Image 1 (tube, rainbow, N blue to C red):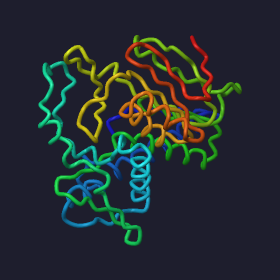
Image 2: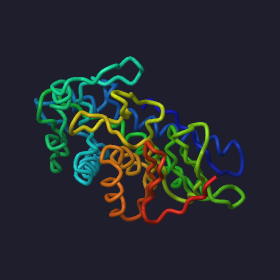
Image 3: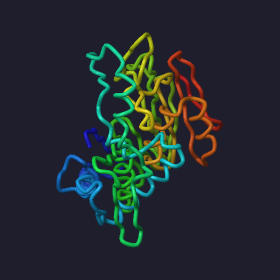
Length: 298
């Protein structure tokens, strides 16, 4: 998945702990084989190869993951869209970009994107991309789902406490060895080597999306590497979004979505969801929180 996973478990001895960690690694690898669009043998690649041609029958697990992704697309008015993989990559965030692409290029770049053209057939458990050239990808949801599955499997095996860290996306359960809650640091986007807050997390996920490492400044305006799949334009105005939810899959998708929707719309949407909270930091350094968050500032 192109992500670094770190797994921490609380166990009676190191041999038991290593066995549990190996179990989690195996589950994460299994998910990668299922959802990878880079692996030509995966069901995801088979769906993409048959875009505009025919539906592809898939495993129940992948079918349900795609169905949930469509649900999040509807919830966010398309700010989240797994058909984003159809986008032409016309934006570069490596320092080489010196001018905006033309409106025509931007419009063309998202011509094949649109979850509305992703057809699910529940009876046949098939997935069909209506238009040739369409693709799905799980870059904004896959590592969160893998972390959720690894966590669920470890709990099933009797592991009472731990953390799955998927490149900074934190998924926790239980408490630390001495009974203290796990505490997750929120990076200060104005100084990525520092944290601005610590939050105690007992059983849930924390996911942060930030543009403090990948962005471009054009005409004195800073653009994030997170692109709105509806318009083809990068998001702007926000530098960091942290979402708290029961599942890392949901938190992963919503963190990206809030970036795209913007501060006001994103916060309003989060406040309508039960047991979901967020912290938004804008490009002026202002911190905005959803309604039920308590922060231990550093």
